Amino acid sequence: MEQGLRHPLVMTTRRRQDGFSLIDLLVVIALIGIVAAIALPSAASSSRGFRMKGNAQSIANLVALAKMRAAAVYSRTRIRADLAGRSLRLEVWVPTDPADKTVGSWVPEGGEVQLSSGVDFGVADRTDPPANTQAALGQSPECTADDALSGATVPDTACIVFNSRGIPVDADGDPMGGNALYITDGTGVYGTTITATPLVRQWWANSSTGQWVKQ
Image (tube, rainbow, N blue to C red; front, side):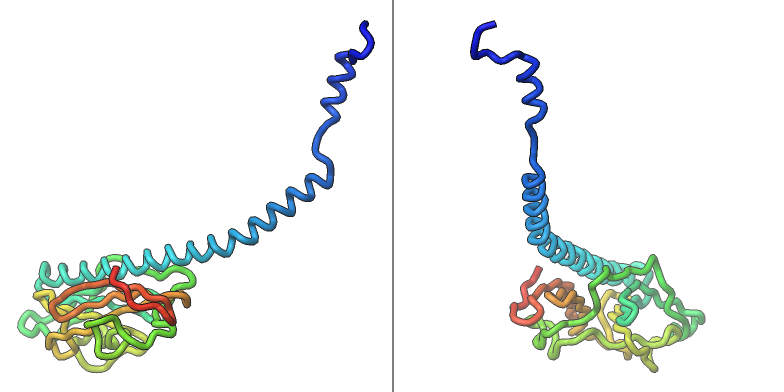
């Protein structure tokens, strides 16, 4: 065998012994930890934002559905928001006396929509409503009792009521603008507003400094 040439077995053994040292592995683990610490908060924030945007779209869709159902069944409908329970549902007024349509009850139609974790009904630090929507920022009026079109209201609720022509009305049945439902995760606010026309619009704003932007 010529001098200077290594035996193949020696070379194979040397290659098999080469690898990462303990220090190399610790450095890699530390880098992974740093990247994760930077990425996770951003990912969590994005996830909350997507969940709240999905909730806002669900509210807008439910309001539009209530408006169409009112005309379809030729009766009042309403969106009832349980502010404390963080949920909302579509309800239809069903008269129990054919001769007196003011006697009856609100009957749920479809399932209940639950807000995502970390999302609540509220306006955060916002003080002004979106342009040309409300005189003062706030949720829609409280709902009336389940067996009444008007009268006593239910605390911690908000209702958007449509008459049989799909026009938003107040407890007395008069056309009403300025309805709205707002949700927030503390960093931003989504609002669904309904004018007397009725025009359903969706808005977004930073919780404290941002301007309302129509979506």
